[in-house]
Amino acid sequence: MRRLLVALSLLAATLWSAPAAAQARNQLGPLCTTDTTPADKMIDACNKIIALKVFRGEQLATIHFWRAVGWNKKGDYSKVITDATEAIRLQPSQAAYNLRGSAYYDKGDYEIAISDFDDALKLGPPSGTIFHNRANAWRGKHDYAKAIADYDLAIKADPKSAFSFQNRGISKQALGDLDGALADINQAIRLDPTLPQPLINRTAIWRAKGDLDRAIADGSEAIRLAKEKPPVNIMTPPNSVLISGYTHRALAYEAKGDYGRAREDYNATLAIVASDAGSKANQATAKVRLSLVTDAAAPIPRDAPSPATQPTTTPAPQRTDAAPAPSPGPAARGARMALIIGNGAYVHVKPLPNPANDARAVAKSLRDIGFTVSEGVDLDRAAMQKMTRDFLREAARAQVAVVYYAGHGVQVDGRNYLIPVDVALKPGAGMTEAMIDMDTIMAGLDDQVRTNILIFDACRNNPMAQQVASAGSSRAIEGASGLAAPTSLGTGATLGAGTLIAFATAPGQVALDGEGANSPFSAALSRHLGTPGLEVQQMLTRVRAEVVSSTRNKQVPWSNSSLLGEVYLAEK
Image (cartoon, rainbow, N blue to C red; front, side, top):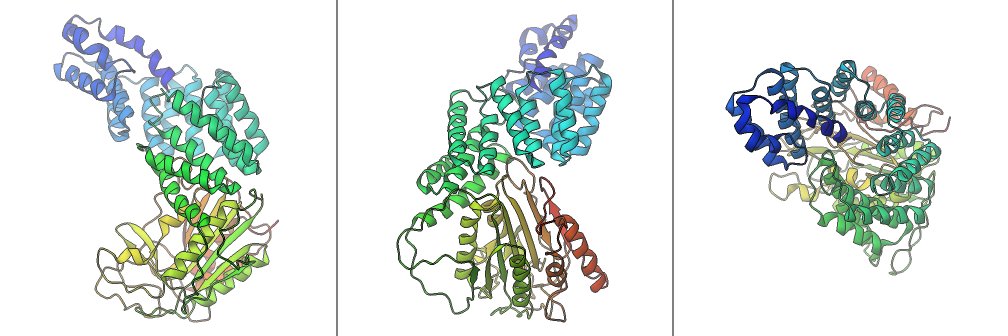
């Protein structure tokens, strides 16, 4: 992107040749049309030039283009789109289409971005930069084959593009081709050994391969480079690379069992100011993982289990003293773990008869296909928090992690919560502190080298209405708006990458508890989980069809995915 903007500085010379622009040329022109100008000064200069009302047509289009560049530096992509659109209206150009497409990409509107990149390429000439940007959009859509094809064209146009090799490697990694990914990342590092980003990507590949020492070494070098030479590309938010480096190295330290150094890196991540969604996502993960590794390094309490708790873990490590928890060994590729919780014996709201049965059925299905399962039934707050945290800590060594929850769940201020059996749902500032935050679970699992499947057979209703305990036989606390969709999936960095989240019902609807021993959703899920050779999204499609049929269209399961390839829970 930046190379194309630098080339467009030639347009500035044409712009300021107009006699009517003497004031702008002398005072404002260089500030508006130089891509190294700070964003606020660039925007202010362009504003003043537009206010002169002496330019029209192609010249005015150029000013709007450069003001869009300024907005892009500030990350205000809506204003980028507005100015780039005006530039295109006045004088269509390859640069303006490319800039607007990049803004749509940053907003997550990949289809529109691809359309803009197509239009940019139609205007010609062929551009490696635009092929690269379109490839990024295909990658955003998880169409890795098309992404790789466009990266091929970008590399053909510019064989020395380290970022094209890097991103092609990321796409190959998403398709499970770790060796191909490693070859591309290595080439990116050879082309520009001063770039920290490819080293961070290679850190993730080494972790996926279980080579934690190499992962830590690459993470360390990436951090050193990010400190020594901060990114100058205007498309790279400040501090994002450094935050990513610390997070990835911390994950490698944690997988190795070096909790002290992991804590240091997580603390370093949290100490840096984040300015973009991806960095904030990494910081959310660091916050959760920091608390987990702190727990792991602390002596294990001898607390007796709660009377309302019946957790079981298969297999379960035996801990007979108060010594610090043993450090886990290097991450074992292929490890598959599941957390299964069924809450029905509620004290303060209408009990649900089936979640315990649902949890046991799903747990059995997963054990039958080789998962190590942590299972809890009718958990109070303390037991549910402990089981969840223990699982999140252990899942750092898993390649596949499955979370299944059956019971009540609610939305408060746009965040989703799972409800322990002893919680009294009463409006108040501290109400959510007694529940389990779904976003915390997602942040704790967030790691692009692992596949996460989160399944919630819970109500989708807000608890703040008057009739808190009027659920009847459904998994609804009351009949208001449903659970919020997980907007964090795919927002950047590692957040949500490789994650699928499924709900038993559609937004705003009620997940039925069912008339038999199991809910309609869990009955269908437990039947299809173990089907050999059934890809997980196809499996959920079958579950959805069965639930719709059995409930006579009263319940329609819903899911959202940022999986990085095909996932099979049961072997083919």
